[in-house]
Length: 84
Image 1: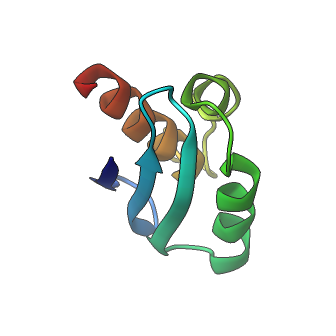
Image 2: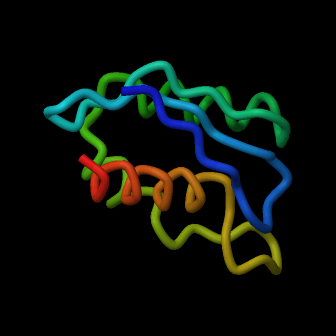
């Protein structure tokens, strides 16, 4: 299932990813934001279980913001899991 999540409070506008029934995440792509860093986040997430990604990314902040692109990705994955 392909999901797109509109990010809030960060430089990237959205994150799109595929999530399989077993929770495996593939094809992660961020729109906007810090290109190299978000390509790195996407590459590290490729083929991993959503729960593992959430564990590592949830709660990360960016500067003085209360969230970050990885944190927004974790929130998107939590939402996707809840909808499954």
